[in-house]
Structure formats: structure tokens, C-alpha cells
Length: 120
Image (spheres, one colour):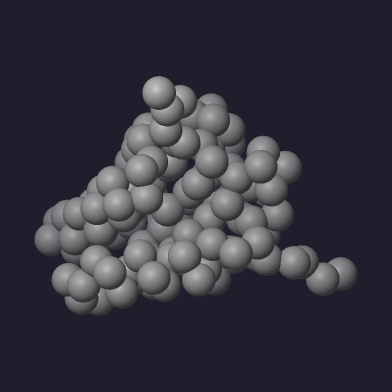
């Protein structure tokens, strides 16, 4: 018998409903493929969420992974996000939503899920 699935937190961004639906579909499919329980999908209509807000939400859900769509502002701050998430033993993955190829999205996310070493 296996234990509970690791928990993930998804993040969607933007006012365009069709784009948000693509983001949700990609995040949901990735979580299912990776055997993750998707605890919540945070939607940020104006792309104004901060690293600390997202890290706090991950802590509240006890998320092992935070899933971001490519192209949102927080992907540019990924090193800082990874640093904050590491305190909680969580990681961040960035998924492409440019195409419908889930295998490509998952492969890119796995490459991106390797721990990032911050330099000072």
C-alpha cells in the first residue's frame, strides 16, 4: 500500500480566460502525470503575486512543488522563489503552455525541477 501523494500548488496568471484555461489544463495534466495531489490553483489576474505570497501559500498547503506556467513574471524571479521554497523543502517547476504537447511540458519541467544553487 502506498502513502499519500505529494502535494502541489498551481499558479495561473492573466486576464485572458482562454489562456488561463490552457494554464489550468497544463498544470492539471502535469500534476496527474507526476502523481501529485493538486491542493489548489491560485489565480493572479494581474500578475502581481510576490515570491513571499506564493511561498506562504505553498507552506499553508504543505506543498512539495509549486507549478508555474512559462512566461509569467514570477518565472523571472525563480531563483528567489526556489530559495524561499527550499526552506520548506519544496521546489518550483515551470511548464510551457505554448503547445499542446504535454510530454514536452513535463520534460521541460523535470529539467527545471533540479535544485538551483543560489550564488552570493
